[in-house]
Length: 376
Image 1 (cartoon, rainbow, N blue to C red):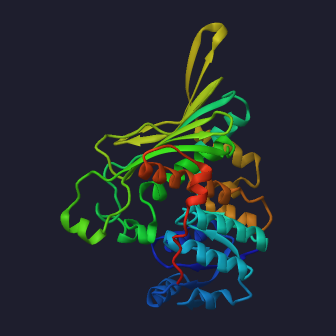
Image 2 (image 1 turned 30 degrees about the vertical axis):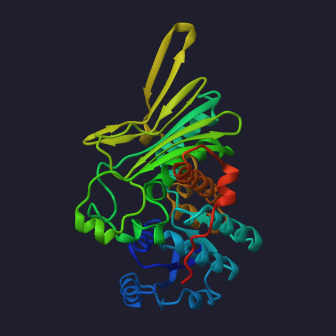
Image 3 (image 1 turned 45 degrees about the horizontal axis):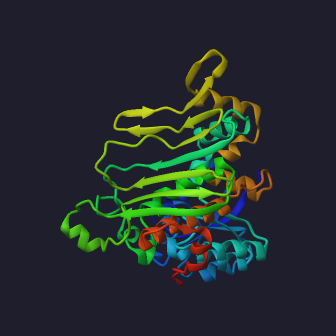
């Protein structure tokens, strides 16, 4: 497979993770890395045999031997850097969420369409075994008419920085715009939207919370002004609904996994509660025999067969692998940007509904969204 020439913008935690994934999946020649912390960029470059280092992403974008860039920055930097990269003739793979606001995310999609460049967003849950199994069941008609779904994400006490993991960039609207919904909810909500067939959002109702105690010094240092818990009810065109609960921290022992139900069956995604792992399950009824079925799906057996039967199955095992395959024209790019943008209008709609104390329409959210972009 021809090596794709890629540059990384951002040498922090996410940039390092993306580099490790490129090494794991293969097919990428990482030719340059950029970070405003040039010393760290040089250290990472030396560790990963990356030949070129930049402190200014604009200088990196002047290179004509780079096919694509991977934007690994905090949320409010995504749009300016990604748009500049596409306008410079580069395809863009961007860390989730798509941006810090719906308006900025929409501008990124507009730039992709205007330049003809691919825009790929890191939505790792699309490539899991359970997502593949769920899509097989849905596309095979085993759920019948879909009418309701639930998106869940649980951390017992996992707020960035204040609970010991991550930096204060995650806890402040100035850099992140949102909390649990933007950080983790994007994975679960986008997964459900993908499985539902990307239905059109019509109305959003929700509430956000920041109620749990934290160490006083961590509260002061973090300037924590985002939500630790977000809940919502989403209505789609055609009557389909979705309820959401996403927690960075909550006084409970766990949530059930996300689920989708239809007229003929239902599915529940895996979830971990302490040491217990809830498996992927399919639920249906044989009406004529008056039997209810609760079935555990063997995901590993399914995955082995898919890889034996489909020579390009590797292209759907990870965001990086999919990106490499799409750049090489091996598979079409999944609509990750559209999924991420629709996830954004849902999350921003929950924020707006919480602030106004009422249900809001998708049109209201789009019209009222303002840019949170920070230009380097």
